[in-house]
Image (cartoon, rainbow, N blue to C red):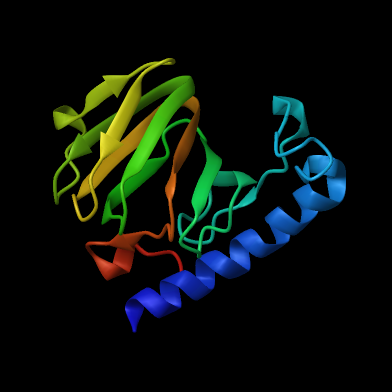
Length: 160
């Protein structure tokens, strides 16, 4: 039940973004399957599953489907990512700022690893993780969906 609610929420969030990108010429049919997106062309929007202080820009894919996806997250300075898990591998690259990230079930800022610009991370499905942003942080995630987020403490979920 939780997963179906999660997938529905992610679908609603990403449907508008994916549709908007295709309408703006990011559809890859004209370029023979290639996708070219300049950073200043990204369309940022709220991330319902992360709440205020986080924004998403979907580059490719439907996050609710079993297909490849690429998207960016932008976090304001000091944003805290509460302990959570994902249903699939999460592969990320820090593009701006420093993301302090850790594996674990309880938030402990002193136990994080500072990942500055250019750093990368790979987190397996079901592995609890958390972190926080130092400065404005932008990182890119890619993998195969469906993508979702489940907070270990349901009270941390802004969708509640």
